[in-house]
Amino acid sequence: MKVVKTSKELDLILSPLRSSAKKIGFVPTMGALHEGHISLLKKAILENDVVICSVFVNPTQFNDPKDLEKYPRPIEKDIELLESAGCHYLFLPDVNDIYADGETWEHSFGKLEQIWEGAMRPGHFKGVGQVVYKLFNIVKPTNAYFGQKDFQQTLIIKKLIADFKLAINLHICPIIREESGLAMSSRNGRLNAIERQSAGNIYKALENTRLSISKGSKDLSELKNQALTILNTISDIKIEYVDIVNPDKLEIIENIDENSPLLMIIAVRLGNTRLIDNMYIRA
Ligand code: PAF
Image (cartoon, rainbow, N blue to C red; front, side, top):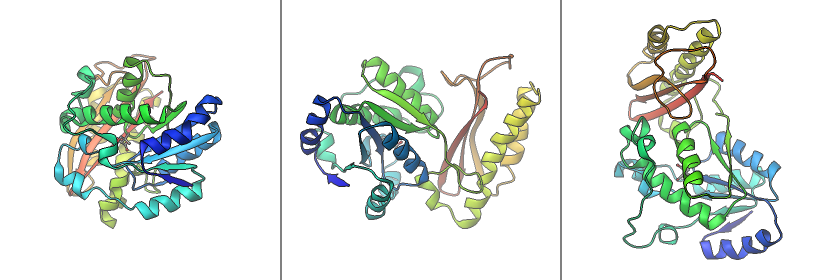
């Protein structure tokens, strides 16, 4: 795997591939890679001629400077993981390669950027939109791969691609879970062993709701209460939201009708660690 540190160098490598119509797969990340990222990468390798993974801890998507500072940056380990997964290029730019001095533009994602994660982390999705637009513009991938775990982010990227009419195929890949059921995340390393094990109850709450719906339950408040009961077995948990929404706009469902897909979304804090998860409780 070749490590490329500037967008100029990456362009020199990718231009001839673009001219010969090679399929370019792109997996953008902020590093601290885990099996979730590697699953995106493996899919990208299967579906493209060449695969680029970027590792860039994007400052504009952190609304809390302490969170940015604390964000894990195990780059040597990331390089090993990418190499053994068969990645072709690692794009590892620094901030000045991505952002110009005093840059202020932003794209509006409307209501989607203000609800759920947007409400908990003001400005977060503007930052995601900025960096993903820039990375897309540098890499110009044929296919881009994102994880379902950051469900709201996938809708933001979908809108970014639609609003700017980008010729990029978006692939949303399934959540990869630890043995306890906890969704893999770069933040899981901040949990202690007990928190990490008990966080598996987030998955149990989702799975319980999915099963209840499959057995015909339609009582939204009962479904939500059951999920809350399971979550509250986790000691020191602070629940930020647990809701059942429609997967295209993330609006709260008022009635469960027969056919529409349903998504359950959860955000909690365990000690100092914020965890989010989601599941199609009816596909
Ligand atoms: O999901 C992430 O890791 C980040 O939000 C992304 C998409 C790489 C943008 O910085």
